[in-house]
Amino acid sequence: MFKKILIANRGEIAVRIIRACREIGVATVAVYSEADRNSLHVDLADETVCIGPARARDSYLNTKNIISATVLTGAEAIHPGFGFLAENSKFAEMCKACHIAFIGPDPEVIEMMGNKAKARQIMGQAGVPIVPGIEGVLANFKQAEASAERIGYPIMLKASAGGGGKGIRIVWSRDELKKAYDMAKKEAQAAFDDDSMYLEKYLVEPRHIEFQILADHYGNVIHLGERDCSIQRRNQKVIEEAPSTVLSDELRWKMGDTAVRAAQAVGYKSAGTIEFLVDNNGGYYFMEMNTRIQVEHPVTELVTGIDIVKEQLKIASGEQLNIRQDDVHIQGHAIECRINAENPALGFRPSPGKVNILLWPGGNGVRLDSALYSGYDIPPTYDSMIAKLITHGQDRNEAISKMRRALDEFIIEGIDTNIEFLFQILNNPKFRCAEIDTSFIAKEFDYGA
Image (tube, rainbow, N blue to C red):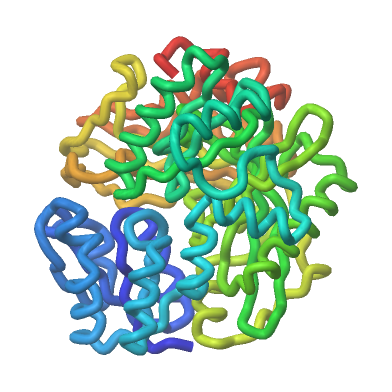
């Protein structure tokens, strides 16, 4: 196992990684921007290094400063968390060249799976079901027009280098295609510095189901069951749960086996996620692979009892998986709510500022991952997610009841949050009956969703 690692991230995921490292005796180095000087992850780490000004590109995306901080402190490895550099193959290659372990898959795999069009092609060749679409990327608008006519509307335009819901447009008819194509390319260029697009059939009202993967350097690959991430707003997840209510035992086995084969097809090593869309007839299709820890990993941890971050560390340090597929058992049900500093009534406008009063929820079966504290000043520079509230119960109804109780106890004053909006989702009769799909929020709520 490593003696010291550097965490190239901030906020709750940095705190989450520090806590895991403390429990297994690994020292940690926190990097921070000038805006994060008073952040919790800075206080908890064994060592700290300031890596630049507030803007992410000058700090958390500043590869030169991060590598320098790693060398300066003698850290043996870098954990990228999620976001920022987590799926940056060039950064992973830099770590390799500097003899620093990157806690994630090989750079080549990140590159392959980061290009969504290429990932589709690889998975199709491996026999993994994929949504009908084009091979490779679109050369121009004329190809997009012809491909859409061949596949049939509705279709989805996606940025090849995409993620986080950026560079995506659903197109219902030929009349909408040109505007959607131009807007998606512009957004992709701004978000990823890459405007290449691909096109696939849009599945109406599917479930978004993902399988958690663990794979070591010795060819051992297992899955830890599925998460249902269908509650989304504009392709951004809002509530996640495990297990999914839509999967039969047979379908769960098939999809889990497919997820393992998908990871094996690219020689995957580390924790990762295979994401699928499931239609109303039980058909399932590969959507993408996330080559990093997921925001929603806690729900899987609560139903399996497996610490995914610790497993990442073990794999990256060269240890062999000591968990077999037969050792994975799903116990009860878990739900995660993303708590954001935003105002849903004002179009989900971000709400940075000082946290004047903070009261955490607690009790049996309640977990909260966050970097908040009373008096903390939330900067306007980064993502609006400030906490993840997770509950675990014997079944889905108990997990929902615990979540409602925990949200009711959760008091944050000084900023706006989406807690009331989450309450409305949990109290919705269709959600309570698990009648959900990726269009749930757009259909049920008038929030400009």
